[in-house]
Amino acid sequence: MAVSTALAAMGYAALGGKRTFTSRPRIVADHYEVLSEPRSAERGRDPLVRLSLASPDL
Image (cartoon, rainbow, N blue to C red; front, side, top):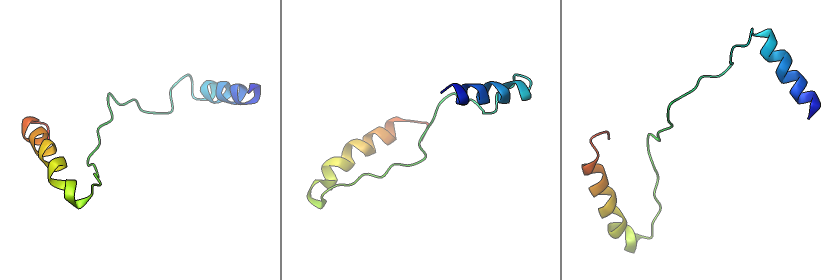
């Protein structure tokens, strides 16, 4: 643990205190996969369709 902390501190100092990653305000999936038994597919599909119609961001 001490070694990894020391290496992180050296890396931070070498970059002048700048972060080496980019922050994102949120993570959003671009698609989903839903698995269902064929006999349950329609019952599962209906709520998903209603949600997609209700959301203008999709």
